[in-house]
Each structure stands twice: as structure tokens, then as C-alpha cells.
Length: 447
Image (cartoon, rainbow, N blue to C red):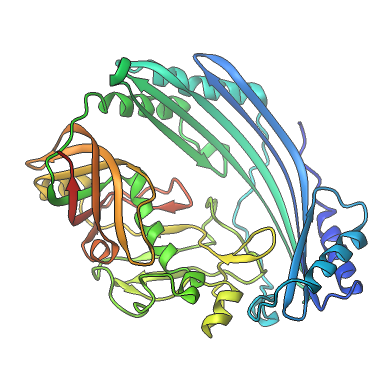
């Protein structure tokens, strides 16, 4: 694995698939061709446990016959006509969907911004092994760490081409480098585990593996000897690693497909103030070197930066063409492409920071809970009811004190959004990013 995969033929193959579908009787069609390479190394206790390498192609053709559609995928493309005939035959007997169709031609992008998504360097297996081992060694060196969950380092590169019968052809490539470590502290039934991980588009932007491992070890040791808290209402402060989940619930409820199905607690909230006036939630597909960046969406539509919430007001739904048609609206370029259809989704989502430091939020809380881990999926996006198992640290008299485990935090997302206050410690580490967040008035169920 010494060279990048040759992607020069993907556009031709996508065009061949679309042309073959039209010849087979499709009214319209689109094709996505993906070529990728990846390599990763896992180590544990200083020894390599697994080295994985992969390389392959994926071709997906979607054919539309009237209001019916079907998609067929393959990992080789010996005969485009055969794949096209299968897709068209399946489409003719598929259920009708009045909203599912290609994006309108006037929405297709004709400009492709350079988002700097491709690091041309390729790491060797030896380099990845060294990074994984360095992260794990640093975690194991933290006093109090007694065992290891392992260290990992990985790299992948992918190229994508989308072609449609409306004349759109677009392509881009992206790379990703990652390092992670997991540490175990304590003995017997008193053991605690924690981790740290980082991913970047460019290898040079990754933190030192030693830093990643040290954070994993420190976090595991800090969790030793947890206690429960007394049951009551209080302020819950979310660590940045998990505060992203709060805006994840927002975008899940603001998803156009959920709105069209009437399965969202936000269905009547568009244009309403659902947060304090200081809150802004922003999605930017054009952030340079962003982990969720892309020059066009899964339908070839131009994707522009979008305020989902500004001044605390819910400004828009997250839409692909199908959900937009069903709602009588226009897509805002947020289509994610699956194997057979598109669905609305986000790119680089950010809860913008506030003005207070995390320490100031903790001091202001007085007594409460600082959460570093959530358990379960207890958010009902139809009602907004929220209940999650949690672990973290007690806040007593404005200071973090002993570790806490086996508690539940509960509330309703409408109230939580209204009482949310972000800190000023935003860091861009993932495709979804948020600072430390304080939420007032949650129920903390402990002993």
C-alpha cells in the first residue's frame, strides 16, 4: 500500500451507469462511485493485536421510473448494462413515493470550493504502530492505571463521484487520521475505564499520541471510588465530550423527515425562541479541513453555511429534496446519501461558545453534577422527554469533588434547551462540536 488509489476512471463509470439506466427504461437516474483505502493498528500491553488493511470500490445506481425507484450496489462493475437492468426492473415494482426524486436541476451546484480535505501523505504500518504504542504507553504510565484497553492508530482515504441524469458530475476526496487510547485504573470490582481519541483530516494536525494517552489514563484514575448522589433537582454541567449529544437531540428533532412524519417535539416550534437569546447553532459544510466538510450534498445540491438556531430562535428544518417536497419547502443542501435513498443530515455542526469559563459555570452552579459519561439512549424525540444514566463528579460549593456513578438525570428537552448555558471552551475536535454546557433544573436520581 504505497500509492493513492487511481480515481480518474470513477467519473466515467458513474456516467456509464446513468446512461445505461436511461437506456434500460429509467426516466431519471443517479450513480455514486466510491473508492477507498484504509489501514489501522491496534496494540495492547505493548504488543500488536491486529493490523487491518482494506481497499475497494463501491458502485451504487439509483433508477427512477415514474414515482417509483430502486437502487442496486456492486463492488465491481464488469457490465453497467446488467446493473442498470436490475435497478430498472426493481424500480418498476417498487412502491410509489410522490416525494422521492432527483434534486431539481436549478438546485445543483456548479462551483466546487477547495476545502483542503486531502492529505496526500500515506502512513506506513510501522508509523501507525509507533503512534498506537506511544498512546498506550503514556496511558499505562499514569500512576493508578493498572491495565490497558489498548491503543489504536488509523488512516483512511476515500474518493467519491456523483453523476445524475440532470447533467451533474461532482467529485471529491478526503483523508482522515486518528489515534485513541483506553486505560483501566483500580483493582477487582473497583476498576474504572476511560479513554481519549482524536481524528483529523491532516496527519500534522493530530495531537501528540502521548498527550492522548495521558488524558485517557488521567480520566480513568479520576473515576476511582465513585459514589452516588442524593436525589434532587439541580444544575447538570456537561463535559464537552458529551455536550455534543444535546445538540444532536436538537438536530434529530429538527430533521425534515421527522417533521414530515410528525414525530418531533419541535413540530410547531419553527420561528419560536427555544433557547436563550445568546444561543447559536450553526452547520458549516465548507469549513476547511472539517471532518464533516463536503463541496456538495448527497444529491449534488450546493451546501451553504446554515444557522439552525440564532438568537435562540429555531430558524429552519434540516432538509433534503424529498423531505422538503413533502413539507412544501426547498432543500437546504443537507442530503446524506445512503445505499438506496437520501436522508437529511448535518455536516460540521457547532454550538457556539458563551462568555464564561467552565470554572465559572461550576462555581455558579454551587451544588450539582458534572457529567463525563452518559449511558443509554433515553431521549424521546417525539415528546422531548429525557432520561439518561450518568457518571461524573459531584459539584459541592462551586467545586468539583468526588466521582459519581449510578445516577440518572432526567428532564424535558424543551426545558433543557431554554435553560442551557454554554461556556467559552469550544474546540473543533469532531464533526459535531460544543463547549462545556450547563443545564439548570434537571432531576438527579441517586440514593
